[in-house]
Image (cartoon, rainbow, N blue to C red):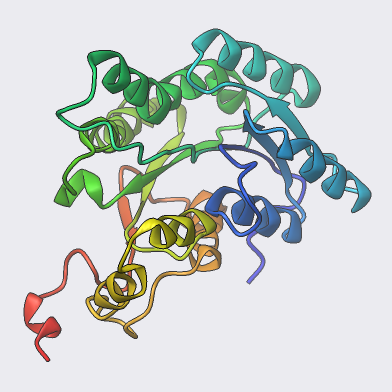
Length: 263
């Protein structure tokens, strides 16, 4: 299926993670479709990804940005707008499950909100003039934690709950501009960060197997590639009448009947 993303300018935040992370996988998938990915992230790894894109003849760039800093986000949006003159899609992907729980300081909680939710608002606000020029669209990457809770991560949970609220608020706000706003909700996906977390646990392999057994469809984790495919379809014109939606890519982990888990 041709998603008609060729030469579309797609901004992806938090996309300079380790190879195989969700943001990096989205960028690679966009490049494979002939789109022009723009990486907005604080990690210098992005410079290498920029070179890889340009070596492939793709005019994508890396804009180094601390996404907890609204002034840097404003500068990034301005640079992107000046270079391309438009933004066809914005994928707000940045997210760190930072464990800012009830025992965290207020400053740590506020920082979690700034990185995991306020950055979504700021990126959207400052990119919006360029999105409006081409009736582009917005896609927010959410988490099951917004719906289920997790324990010990109040900042992240509050942020991701807010992200879902903003998704529908923007869908309403931007109807008049023919701009769509949707969210992808992720549950258990095998990423380098997930692998690193499992390795920190004393009984990591046992914990991993207990999680995998609870994923109804295939008893396996969602791959970053499956998430990227859903993202690309949602931002494409193939989803042209989809807005205000929460699309859960999780093998049925969150919503299906618990009886499926009975051994």
